[in-house]
Image 1 (tube, protein in one colour):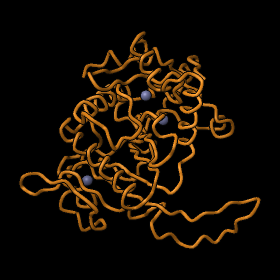
Image 2 (cartoon, rainbow, N blue to C red):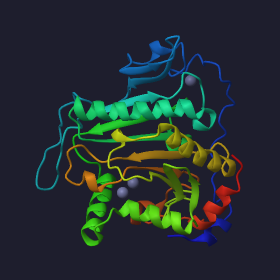
Image 3 (cartoon, helix red, strand yellow):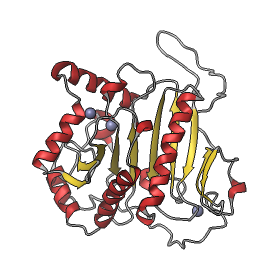
Image 4 (cartoon, rainbow, N blue to C red):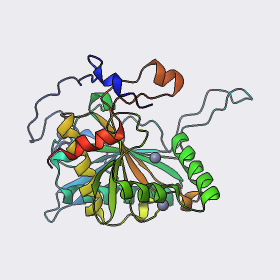
Length: 317
Ligand SMILES: [Zn+2]
Ligand SMILES: [Zn+2]
Ligand SMILES: [Zn+2]
């Protein structure tokens, strides 16, 4: 629901708690800063520079929501309840050894490296752990659900397809069976034609405010060329530049914004995967979810996507 009148409400944008001013030097109590590697479990993978210093580091989540050796499921399974052990993997990708808040403080080259690591970790989960579906996401800021400020990303891989991804896969299949075309390719062509919601574009990627965004300035980032799985993604620098540009623009409107950045990518071995078109969803968390959202699954967005795009384009990057 787009309801622009709601923006006039006092206190519509709840401001996030003021975050500590930061230096870019290592913080003694931050487990993700260079020099504090002993505060995390041993790394699963890392990328190093010419001097052998790590630039991107992957560690197991110290408090995993899922694991490869899950505890025994104590709940009964019955007609009423279906219980399954939470098998899977939960990894943390530390995007930089420096104590930065988000990608607005990282150069495009560094973001490109991080994106390559995402593809590597997805392939690892699919091919070596035999987990067919994964989510890669960022929780930034307190309202975005972050517990640590240092720039990082999480990957969870599962033996099942998560609900939202499953719905998107099915919607893409249903659309294709009716129209013989990829739903997302059609959306891209439409957005590039009228350009009313376009926020950023280069030769390989585009970003636009979502037609029915759940939160003000919700933006989607897609490759122009059809591809189901992010493991095959091309032109890392162009994608890094696009993602960074959208976050910089949003940060120009909502200083130090809280947001979730989520990758939707086709599961391995799913017959629907070729029909899918991978994409990132960037959801600023400027308003809190309340009764209508929890109770009805109805999201009120107080800024139309067309107006949001116009506002974002006014920001200098
Ligand atoms: Zn840190
Ligand atoms: Zn497509
Ligand atoms: Zn999606």
